[in-house]
Amino acid sequence: MKIVFMGNPQFAVPSLRKLVKSDHDVLSVVTNPPKPAGRGKKLINSPVAVCAKELNLPIIEADDLKSEKILHSLKELKADIFAVVAYRILPKIVISIPTKGAINLHGSLLPKYRGAAPIQWALIKGETETGLTTFIIQPKVDRGNILLQKTITIEPEDDYGSLAEKMSHSGAELLVDTLDRFENENVVPLKQVESNVTLAPKIAPAFTNINWKKSANEIHNLIRGLAPSPGAKTVLDEKRLKIFKTKFIEEDSTLNTGEISNIEKETFSVQTGKGQLVVVEVQLEGKRRMSAGDFLRGVQLDIGQILS
Image 1: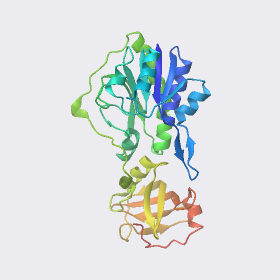
Image 2: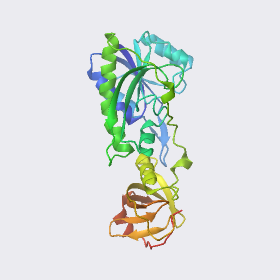
Image 3: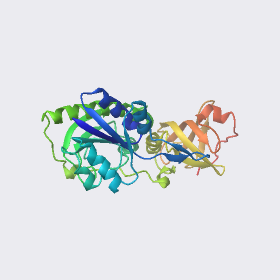
Image 4: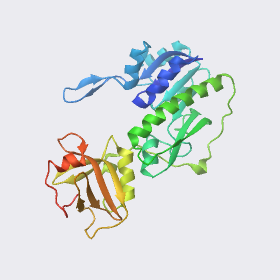
């Protein structure tokens, strides 16, 4: 089939590479325009744009999908299908362009975790498994009929970075399999069961603040879901401290919530609302990301000191 691929982040890159190696014909890649980043505000291409250039694929940089120029470019391609991975909500007018519709790869077992951050929320909620879904795109977000699904185990050591990487490669295989079956009419679309819906909204900045009144297990899962980016954060001596890797113990100390309860050579612990959080990897404001051991060798930390 003739396909237009749409995506932005690294999560979508394995799908694009897999599609190029498949029997399908990738006509063009739609992605966001370069964005200024860093102190020098240098323009940075999306990971999908970088990959498309490496593969010598035509690129459509789209700010506004409803613009006459973009719509004309998409119609001129005469695609059979738009394959969408971690891109954006498609307007109805765009969905109607390809002759066979548009298919999306989503990072959860729909209808569970509909929304912009399904992988993060699965970790934050302490799930032991999640999955991937391909579905036919409809105007309402993540509500189209399901084509194929694949279950993914969440390992205890997984964080957002490792789980997304693992899922991106499994998702690439699922997307190509879906397109193969769709072309051969060898897949039966299934309606989503609305009573099973859970939501996975975009992570708001305020949500990244650690609430030490929660249990050590809950905070541990929050940190996993936000690592490596944007990172869960607290405050130490009026400086932001991001925490990227932790363990937890169920036993409480005699100290108050948010107080440093133990200091070892390579870790330190904080009393939570229930249990103690053992901190393994951090980044203090203005410093690089480092092990808790390296951090402790560079700062004076005391038992009873408060993280807020």
